[in-house]
Image (tube, rainbow over the protein chains, first blue to last red):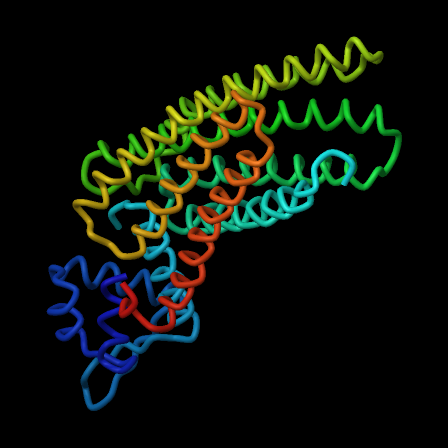
Length: 81
Length: 250
């Protein structure tokens, strides 16, 4: 969820370094999670001028919205996310 | 309206409360599939029991006051459904109490995919209560005025015991909910806590109404309970805005 939020907060497209800082993850874990998100078609990987970018897909936007709703529902019942 | 002029209002309260309870159950079920959280399973199961009980009771009471079908059979059905509802209610609040205690005392995050096996302990109370309910339903097969009177007496006893147990379980939920809210200070949680407090007050009034056979106080209790479910509905509606608007509303 932190990774998806980090990409969204950057306008839907983010460099790995930005995601790394915002999601507060190690490089290895970030690479692993980004790979999973790409496989699930929640995030797409693009190359531009030798730089890698990650973009939220339509599925990713919907999934993040659903996660945030779930988080608010759980918080409403006094549970930690 | 042969029995009580405000009975249709009671039915409306029960019907709307039941719909809200089923809505909460649906969302808890849906988010449990996403998050695999054991407490969400308790919430979903508990609200499903409550919702079904409320809908069943309002449906059968409607049959009675609108005189649909044989009046004698309808009364037997109403008494048995009322007992069934009270037993489902005990089961539901027992499930909430267990869920809240687990939520309050479980270490850090409550989210665990292993939770499925653990949720069975909470279900045992529900199974026990519904088993008792089926024993009440056995009486439906018998007929006769005397049997009807016995059923009415049994139903009143079930109702009284049910209210006492419900008040105990709800007090546990409210106590745990207050502790949890004191730590999280979440505004959304305040609506849920408020709804449980209102439902607890409603059941205290129901208890008094049952003890003194007061229909007016029973109606007042129904109204307070409905206000509790209304608070849950506001929580659901407010929460649904959050997905698109980020966490601004919290």
